[in-house]
Length: 249
Image (cartoon, rainbow, N blue to C red; front, side):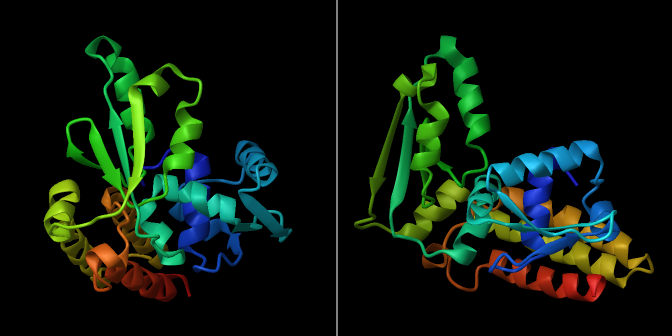
Protein backbone atom coordinates (compact mmCIF):
# COMPACT_ATOMS: atom_id res chain seq x y z
CA UNK A 1 0.00 0.00 0.00
CA UNK A 2 2.89 2.37 0.56
CA UNK A 3 1.45 3.93 3.73
CA UNK A 4 2.78 2.87 7.11
CA UNK A 5 1.23 5.42 9.46
CA UNK A 6 -2.10 4.19 10.82
CA UNK A 7 -3.46 7.70 11.27
CA UNK A 8 -3.01 8.41 7.56
CA UNK A 9 -4.49 5.04 6.60
CA UNK A 10 -7.60 5.78 8.64
CA UNK A 11 -8.08 9.26 7.18
CA UNK A 12 -7.67 7.95 3.64
CA UNK A 13 -9.92 4.93 4.18
CA UNK A 14 -12.73 7.05 5.59
CA UNK A 15 -12.67 9.45 2.64
CA UNK A 16 -12.21 6.98 -0.21
CA UNK A 17 -14.98 4.70 1.05
CA UNK A 18 -17.33 7.52 1.97
CA UNK A 19 -18.50 10.40 -0.23
CA UNK A 20 -17.74 14.15 -0.40
CA UNK A 21 -20.37 14.70 2.32
CA UNK A 22 -18.20 12.59 4.68
CA UNK A 23 -20.81 10.00 5.55
CA UNK A 24 -19.86 7.29 8.03
CA UNK A 25 -17.95 4.13 7.08
CA UNK A 26 -17.98 0.78 8.83
CA UNK A 27 -14.40 -0.47 9.04
CA UNK A 28 -15.10 -4.15 8.60
CA UNK A 29 -12.75 -7.06 7.97
CA UNK A 30 -12.67 -6.47 4.20
CA UNK A 31 -11.52 -2.86 4.58
CA UNK A 32 -8.97 -3.87 7.19
CA UNK A 33 -7.44 -6.34 4.74
CA UNK A 34 -7.41 -3.83 1.87
CA UNK A 35 -5.69 -1.18 4.00
CA UNK A 36 -3.50 -3.64 5.88
CA UNK A 37 -4.75 -2.44 9.25
CA UNK A 38 -6.25 -4.33 12.17
CA UNK A 39 -8.46 -2.98 14.91
CA UNK A 40 -6.07 -4.04 17.66
CA UNK A 41 -5.45 -2.09 20.85
CA UNK A 42 -2.85 0.17 19.25
CA UNK A 43 -5.17 1.10 16.40
CA UNK A 44 -8.08 1.68 18.78
CA UNK A 45 -5.82 3.94 20.85
CA UNK A 46 -5.00 5.98 17.74
CA UNK A 47 -8.70 6.18 16.91
CA UNK A 48 -9.51 7.46 20.42
CA UNK A 49 -6.80 10.10 20.07
CA UNK A 50 -8.14 11.15 16.67
CA UNK A 51 -11.64 11.43 18.14
CA UNK A 52 -10.28 13.56 21.00
CA UNK A 53 -8.50 15.74 18.43
CA UNK A 54 -11.82 16.12 16.55
CA UNK A 55 -10.50 14.45 13.41
CA UNK A 56 -13.03 11.60 13.62
CA UNK A 57 -16.48 10.92 14.99
CA UNK A 58 -17.53 7.47 16.14
CA UNK A 59 -21.09 7.02 14.95
CA UNK A 60 -22.05 3.92 16.90
CA UNK A 61 -20.70 0.60 17.99
CA UNK A 62 -21.27 -2.30 15.67
CA UNK A 63 -20.20 -5.86 16.30
CA UNK A 64 -16.93 -6.27 18.19
CA UNK A 65 -14.77 -6.72 15.10
CA UNK A 66 -16.03 -3.55 13.38
CA UNK A 67 -16.21 0.16 14.12
CA UNK A 68 -18.26 2.87 12.41
CA UNK A 69 -16.52 6.21 11.96
CA UNK A 70 -16.76 9.39 9.94
CA UNK A 71 -14.31 12.14 9.09
CA UNK A 72 -14.90 15.58 10.56
CA UNK A 73 -14.03 18.76 8.68
CA UNK A 74 -10.81 18.90 10.72
CA UNK A 75 -10.05 15.34 9.69
CA UNK A 76 -10.65 16.19 6.04
CA UNK A 77 -8.27 19.16 6.22
CA UNK A 78 -5.64 16.93 7.84
CA UNK A 79 -6.07 14.42 5.01
CA UNK A 80 -5.58 17.19 2.43
CA UNK A 81 -2.13 17.94 3.84
CA UNK A 82 -1.22 14.36 2.93
CA UNK A 83 -3.29 14.07 -0.26
CA UNK A 84 -4.06 17.55 -1.64
CA UNK A 85 -6.03 16.10 -4.57
CA UNK A 86 -9.12 15.77 -2.37
CA UNK A 87 -9.35 19.42 -1.26
CA UNK A 88 -11.02 20.90 -4.33
CA UNK A 89 -13.48 18.04 -4.59
CA UNK A 90 -15.24 19.65 -1.63
CA UNK A 91 -14.32 23.32 -1.63
CA UNK A 92 -13.90 26.10 -4.16
CA UNK A 93 -10.55 27.64 -5.00
CA UNK A 94 -10.31 31.25 -3.82
CA UNK A 95 -8.15 32.21 -6.81
CA UNK A 96 -5.09 32.93 -4.68
CA UNK A 97 -1.58 31.55 -5.01
CA UNK A 98 0.61 30.87 -1.99
CA UNK A 99 4.31 31.41 -2.57
CA UNK A 100 6.90 29.96 -0.22
CA UNK A 101 10.51 31.12 -0.36
CA UNK A 102 13.26 29.83 1.88
CA UNK A 103 16.98 30.55 2.03
CA UNK A 104 18.43 28.06 4.48
CA UNK A 105 22.24 28.01 4.58
CA UNK A 106 24.05 24.89 3.39
CA UNK A 107 25.41 24.33 6.87
CA UNK A 108 21.78 24.06 8.00
CA UNK A 109 20.82 21.57 5.30
CA UNK A 110 19.22 19.30 7.89
CA UNK A 111 16.64 22.05 8.50
CA UNK A 112 16.08 22.46 4.76
CA UNK A 113 15.65 18.74 4.23
CA UNK A 114 13.25 18.49 7.15
CA UNK A 115 11.15 21.37 5.82
CA UNK A 116 10.96 19.77 2.39
CA UNK A 117 9.87 16.45 3.88
CA UNK A 118 7.20 18.06 6.06
CA UNK A 119 5.56 20.04 3.24
CA UNK A 120 6.07 17.39 0.55
CA UNK A 121 2.38 16.48 0.37
CA UNK A 122 0.95 19.99 0.45
CA UNK A 123 0.57 20.52 -3.31
CA UNK A 124 3.60 22.81 -3.48
CA UNK A 125 5.54 22.84 -6.74
CA UNK A 126 9.10 24.12 -7.36
CA UNK A 127 8.89 27.29 -9.45
CA UNK A 128 12.57 28.08 -9.02
CA UNK A 129 15.22 26.90 -6.58
CA UNK A 130 13.96 27.45 -3.02
CA UNK A 131 10.86 29.13 -4.46
CA UNK A 132 7.63 27.12 -4.31
CA UNK A 133 4.04 27.85 -5.29
CA UNK A 134 0.61 26.30 -4.65
CA UNK A 135 -3.09 27.18 -4.95
CA UNK A 136 -3.77 25.43 -1.65
CA UNK A 137 -4.44 27.49 1.52
CA UNK A 138 -1.35 26.22 3.33
CA UNK A 139 -0.24 29.37 5.15
CA UNK A 140 -1.96 28.62 8.51
CA UNK A 141 -0.52 25.09 8.48
CA UNK A 142 2.93 26.38 7.54
CA UNK A 143 2.81 28.97 10.29
CA UNK A 144 1.96 26.31 12.88
CA UNK A 145 4.67 24.05 11.50
CA UNK A 146 7.57 26.51 11.78
CA UNK A 147 6.43 28.80 14.59
CA UNK A 148 9.16 29.19 17.23
CA UNK A 149 11.46 26.83 15.32
CA UNK A 150 14.88 27.68 13.96
CA UNK A 151 13.79 27.49 10.31
CA UNK A 152 11.14 30.19 10.83
CA UNK A 153 13.70 32.99 10.32
CA UNK A 154 14.69 31.63 6.90
CA UNK A 155 11.16 31.52 5.45
CA UNK A 156 9.02 34.07 3.63
CA UNK A 157 5.47 33.32 2.52
CA UNK A 158 3.09 35.36 0.37
CA UNK A 159 -0.39 35.31 -1.12
CA UNK A 160 -0.91 36.65 -4.63
CA UNK A 161 -3.18 36.64 -7.67
CA UNK A 162 -2.11 35.81 -11.20
CA UNK A 163 -2.20 38.97 -13.32
CA UNK A 164 -0.89 37.89 -16.72
CA UNK A 165 1.09 35.17 -18.48
CA UNK A 166 0.18 31.73 -19.83
CA UNK A 167 -0.88 29.73 -16.78
CA UNK A 168 -0.77 26.44 -18.68
CA UNK A 169 2.98 26.89 -19.23
CA UNK A 170 3.49 27.67 -15.55
CA UNK A 171 1.40 24.69 -14.43
CA UNK A 172 3.25 22.15 -16.58
CA UNK A 173 6.65 23.63 -15.64
CA UNK A 174 5.93 23.52 -11.92
CA UNK A 175 3.92 20.28 -11.63
CA UNK A 176 4.76 18.36 -14.84
CA UNK A 177 1.08 17.69 -15.49
CA UNK A 178 1.79 16.09 -18.88
CA UNK A 179 3.94 13.48 -17.17
CA UNK A 180 1.34 12.96 -14.46
CA UNK A 181 -1.32 12.38 -17.11
CA UNK A 182 0.83 9.60 -18.60
CA UNK A 183 1.14 8.06 -15.13
CA UNK A 184 -2.63 8.03 -14.73
CA UNK A 185 -3.10 6.42 -18.15
CA UNK A 186 -0.60 3.71 -17.25
CA UNK A 187 -2.61 3.14 -14.05
CA UNK A 188 -5.81 2.70 -16.07
CA UNK A 189 -4.13 -0.09 -18.00
CA UNK A 190 -3.10 -1.80 -14.77
CA UNK A 191 -6.64 -1.44 -13.45
CA UNK A 192 -8.02 -3.01 -16.61
CA UNK A 193 -5.65 -5.97 -16.29
CA UNK A 194 -6.55 -6.44 -12.62
CA UNK A 195 -10.29 -6.30 -13.26
CA UNK A 196 -9.95 -8.75 -16.16
CA UNK A 197 -8.24 -11.31 -13.94
CA UNK A 198 -9.75 -14.20 -12.02
CA UNK A 199 -8.67 -13.19 -8.52
CA UNK A 200 -10.98 -12.65 -5.56
CA UNK A 201 -12.72 -9.27 -5.44
CA UNK A 202 -10.90 -8.35 -2.25
CA UNK A 203 -7.52 -9.04 -3.84
CA UNK A 204 -8.51 -6.98 -6.87
CA UNK A 205 -9.61 -4.08 -4.67
CA UNK A 206 -6.32 -4.20 -2.77
CA UNK A 207 -4.35 -3.96 -6.02
CA UNK A 208 -6.56 -1.18 -7.35
CA UNK A 209 -6.07 0.75 -4.10
CA UNK A 210 -2.32 0.30 -4.13
CA UNK A 211 -2.02 1.71 -7.65
CA UNK A 212 -4.38 4.56 -6.90
CA UNK A 213 -2.64 5.66 -3.73
CA UNK A 214 0.66 5.80 -5.60
CA UNK A 215 -0.87 8.24 -8.12
CA UNK A 216 -2.66 10.27 -5.45
CA UNK A 217 0.73 10.82 -3.81
CA UNK A 218 1.91 12.40 -7.06
CA UNK A 219 -1.16 14.56 -7.78
CA UNK A 220 -0.83 18.16 -6.48
CA UNK A 221 -4.60 18.56 -6.39
CA UNK A 222 -4.92 21.56 -8.70
CA UNK A 223 -8.42 23.08 -8.95
CA UNK A 224 -10.53 22.80 -12.10
CA UNK A 225 -9.92 26.49 -12.82
CA UNK A 226 -6.29 25.56 -13.54
CA UNK A 227 -6.55 22.09 -15.12
CA UNK A 228 -10.11 22.04 -16.45
CA UNK A 229 -13.08 19.92 -15.43
CA UNK A 230 -11.88 17.06 -17.63
CA UNK A 231 -8.52 16.69 -15.85
CA UNK A 232 -7.58 13.02 -15.81
CA UNK A 233 -7.28 13.04 -12.02
CA UNK A 234 -11.01 13.76 -11.77
CA UNK A 235 -11.68 10.99 -14.28
CA UNK A 236 -9.61 8.58 -12.18
CA UNK A 237 -11.61 9.45 -9.07
CA UNK A 238 -14.89 8.80 -10.90
CA UNK A 239 -13.65 5.47 -12.23
CA UNK A 240 -12.34 4.50 -8.79
CA UNK A 241 -15.80 5.05 -7.28
CA UNK A 242 -17.35 2.88 -9.98
CA UNK A 243 -14.78 0.12 -9.37
CA UNK A 244 -15.34 0.42 -5.62
CA UNK A 245 -19.06 -0.08 -6.13
CA UNK A 246 -18.49 -3.19 -8.27
CA UNK A 247 -15.90 -4.85 -6.05
CA UNK A 248 -17.28 -3.83 -2.64
CA UNK A 249 -21.01 -3.92 -3.38
